[in-house]
Image 1 (cartoon, rainbow, N blue to C red):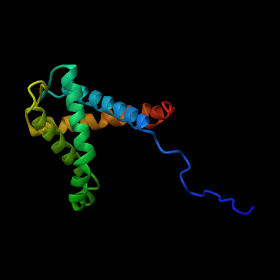
Image 2: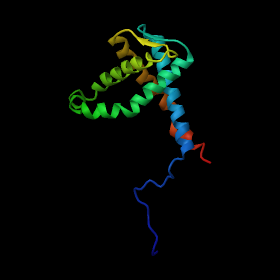
Image 3: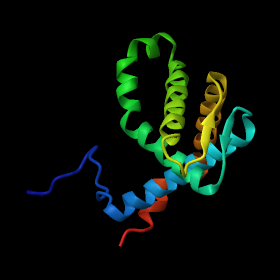
Image 4: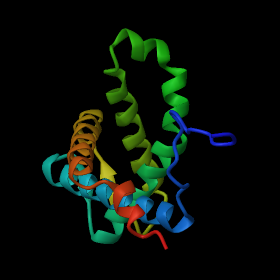
Length: 148
């Protein structure tokens, strides 16, 4: 058996295509939009109007979570370790408040948060809704069905 190599512990699954990554991104975006919508309907201090605003807020929040959250997690690692990860709620609250501030810069996006506690509970609800929806809807698995 010369020349035969056993791939042990190596991921032999082919890399995802650009189409698969796009489909997974859109599904994650819609899951986040559902979380934002639920939070806006349950928390009195969060104001959201229209499907377009919901999708825009979900896009802003998703981009902040993808690019800024890893930096915040690394920068606050001691606080995260001392709080057994509970400080992530504070980070999520800050990112939701930043999302509201950024959304306020656009006239077509109608999203506002009244207080820290509204942002806090909104962040908790968005996280829970996203977690539970992701248990039932796997963006990567669905995206693999789009392989050409």
